[in-house]
Amino acid sequence: MLKKLWRNSAFRFGILVLLALLALALAAPLLGTVDPSAMDSAHINTVRGTRGEFALLDGSSVAHTFWMGADNFGRDIYSRVLYGTRTSLLVAAFTAALAIGLGAVLGMLAGYFRAVDMLLMRVMDGLMAIPAILLAIALVAALGAQLWTVVVAIAIPEVPRVTRLVRALVLTLREEPFVEAARALATPTPLVLARHILPNALAPLIVQGTFIAASAVLTEAILSFLGLGLPADIPTWGNIMAEGRVQFTQYPGNVLFPALFLVPTVLAINLLGDGLRDVLDPKFAKRI
Image: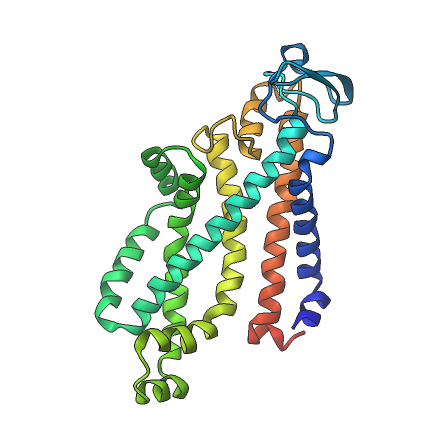
């Protein structure tokens, strides 16, 4: 399986780009960055490539190169973009895990127990009728702008799609001979779901999780760009672009630099999902 994955060019490109971004996020303190929230009035709107003394929060200063310039608050964009990578990857991972976890549980309940199928699916249909971004905005406004609330707000609109996917799989799997044999042996229902049904649904769930992660990165950037995401003291690509758009004509780098990280991240996650689908889905695996 690993050999097949590595031979897939989409998977190989996606995983390499994501590993590079993860390395940048983890090594941000070692890559010549400063506190991404620190402001230095002496360097407001500093152009990229300028070298000077950056004032730290403790009153000291350090020699620093503004590789991407500074914004209209005197904050180093290079530092904010690198630390924003951490935020985006965390939001992507937590959102995908939460949406897949909730959707898998609800989908197995709806597909295995006919008594709750109608009620659960009508609730899911109601959630799907609301545009995802509007539902996310409403949830953030109700819960407040924090990391966990943003994750919940982005994950909830994705849950109905995962639920419908798992339900369709369970409706087929519960009629398979190995499931009927397990029931005939009086295997408890939780064990039937955990041992026989869930493992056979993991491959589609993993693929779906990658697409949810890519969508989460974009949605978080949209929320932050609209001023409804994480607070400004937490660097994200969305709020960096939001703060830079007012001076886009004079300082386009304030918007373009975070966008240069956002685009390959979403592309890499989508390609990773495509590669996983090609290998894990039997319909596509035959072509490899």
